[in-house]
Image (cartoon, rainbow, N blue to C red):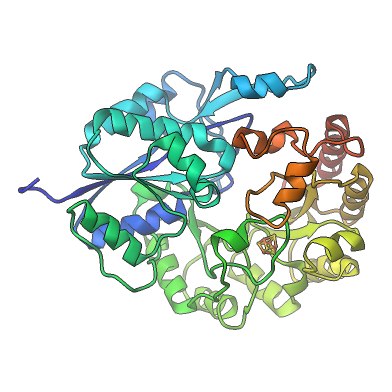
Length: 454
Ligand code: SF4
């Protein structure tokens, strides 16, 4: 190691699931670490096991269909459903299970050639831990002596399970510059400057592919009972618009044109962060396409902001509608007054957004939720002729609603995160069955079919 720079291996693992769509799915936290390490003199070896362009895999598996905006499918390989799911699946459950990403021998080969001094692995949904375990196992196989560090959503929500499954040396529920510095120094590797904020993610096309993700603000000022935001980012803080613009410009200069915001609360304190950021974009000569896959708060949208968003390059806008039921909003979050949705849609249309480019998320499958409530919500959104997305609920360990989920579910949620998978419908009950859910999906498909291409 004397004659070369220290080498950090960063891995975005494969995913095992019933379905997977790339709606700007990028390892944002891993790319922040990459910037810090690169600035501290490390060589960064990034292995994206979800790389949809991998040449060797494309020779074996069907090439994934991708869209011009940087979304699309991943490589998919059918695999057997885990035994624990088989044992609890209803007799008529027919969904196929798959491994998404580059072929395992390809992943092994890439890791074999990396020769790292330390490895960092990202984690996503709790029920995706199989892919993380696979990647960590390969790293351990080739490099038994190097530190393996895991962070991300699953690590943050289920650190003990994560440690047991991956054998990681360190599972980070939070990560800041001081913790990262400690990790590096205890491995006798060069440290990073302590005390500052985590930086914006690294730039470079080798990392991003055909779309980039950004985050303007950290955290969310609301505390919806079903959400993980309060656990993973407990404090809301508005972002620095100048810094966000610099990051955007850096990425834009590499040729990226599609940008998705990962914010939990994109519109919160918008006069401090979003509005000045959008003005800077409009003053520049850049012509980006912006997206909000996480949805924005209905109650925080006003006409001036909507007009600015449209002019700055937002191609669509997704709203956290959740439900048309007043009781729902009283019970779960009070994010907006239930009756105000139609006015917000009218305002967006008058701001220049076409109805087919207005998307609304409707939550389905909460504990004790009746199918009729979701049906009413679908009807309300459908009457506005906007695009509907059913957000099928996954129980979130540690969230205020977790205990109610554990008690209401027919599945042992605390024992096995694979049961959190929304395709397995963990909160199915007499008032909302899988058949009901399928009926809702058909209604949504029918409603969306009447819209334009978007
Ligand atoms: S507003 Fe959205 S991000 Fe914030 S707590 Fe509620 S669901 Fe989570």
